[in-house]
View 1 (spheres, one colour):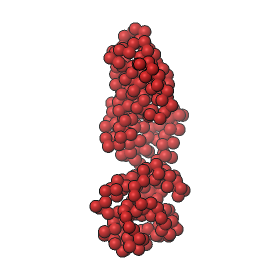
View 2 (view 1 turned 45 degrees about the horizontal axis):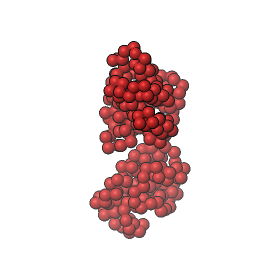
View 3 (view 1 turned 90 degrees about the horizontal axis):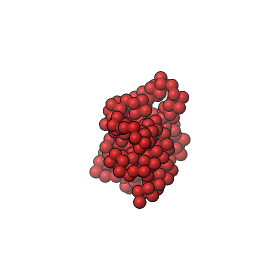
View 4 (view 1 turned 30 degrees about the horizontal axis):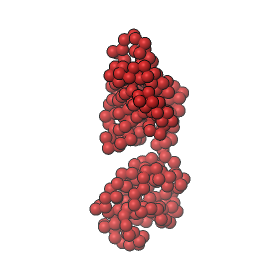
Length: 272
């Protein structure tokens, strides 16, 4: 994990140039009145928690000599420092995927991705102690990270602990649109489990139950096929529950997932 610091002219050599011999330093030249700077700042700070680099934030109004020395003409202006040399980076705001590509190009790896891989490996092995340990590591290192909170909620839904899953979902920043969509999908799974208590023993009830149980286990291919069969037989079944369940799974998978694309098309064909 890296760090995020505020740097002035007097500290520049010691805080920026010298550490760059050990790890890359990104200088964020910013201004408090700059709107784009306020958009870029949280992105860079988040990435500094994942990657092994130092984020040095320099206010150009408080440090005009530094801004002049490095010919900063517009902000945000991000420079890259390695081996004591200040190099061009970018001006303006880059989307997060491009920022990650930049860091990867510097030979940096995300500790978050490594920890997530360890968590997924533990899930695959099925060892409860390893899973809990990996999850605890993630939550300790990245307590407010939406991806981690979603992982925790997914785990507890799989373990049928919907109350604890809901607690983690409530911690997700509502401003994170992608995470919110996923969180709503997980809430849909919790609602789906609750609906099972009202099912009878009709053929449609049996089909819906099997599909719902598959969804709760994460077997979305089986679940989508089962829910689609219910829609094809009775669109109005339980107030359109099968179609709504499919939409929940689409949220969980994302729009570009092949299963979503294929079953969304088949759903439209069944409906119209």
